[in-house]
Length: 326
Image 1 (tube, rainbow, N blue to C red):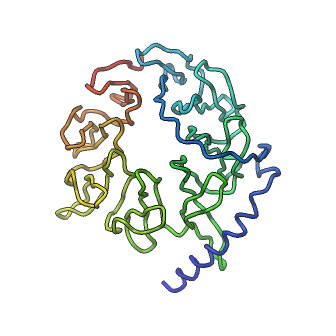
Image 2: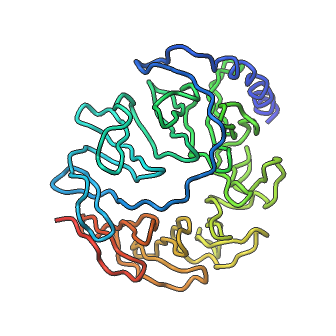
Image 3: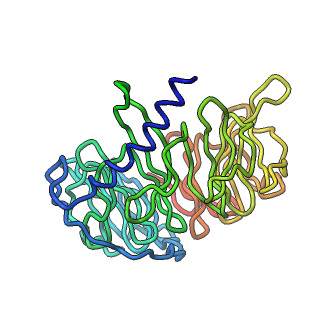
């Protein structure tokens, strides 16, 4: 434990070198690192009007009626956010299209994620950084992972060779790429509603505030971010590990009785029951859509992607099928 503590202290002091590394130049890939300073942009809460959909092995986008709006010609796609969506083209590179299917940011990245607060995480070489909507790198690719920004903060993973050992730590960065909460956690989620789930080294999962104060003790095996006042957590219960939902005080609002649980969105959350089927419950734990799916996503603008019999479909909040893969 003493050696581990020493390594963690060294990792914190090593951040000074990480700050100095954020200078303009070329990254480890062919991506041109045009560094720009971007002011904080509040998250665009406009719900997406288009949804990823697969047809004949390719991906495009449908609207809320199930009509294919962007023809399926991409290898992979992710959801629209702030007017753009990440898409993978034939050469396996990722770029961004607008809602008309026009390429707005050229496909030069090894991986790309949706925009949040004006920034999107991309992978250049084997490291992650962030671009703005002009496709310019505003955070150089020097991290092993970056989550979407929420309230001006993102979870970032830093790997450093400290005292001859490769050490990985999770912390939180601002939009300038500088840590405001050092990477001293074994794992971490994103900040929502003023709290973030973190796994404390040598302990379990709990929740901290932006000042690093532990607000909910690390007593959980796993934990997800808050949404709608609730967070899903996994804990030992009657000799089993089950998922339930807690409030900001750390007390259960929905008792642990699920085998897996996701994060609330638009008042509903995907949960898995003992037969490994997924359904949706409301914030009282009552089933709204019965568990019959192989997998489910999160609701966006009234629709959610689900998988049934190896096919993708979209359903509404009442379980009605809006679109199904042919």
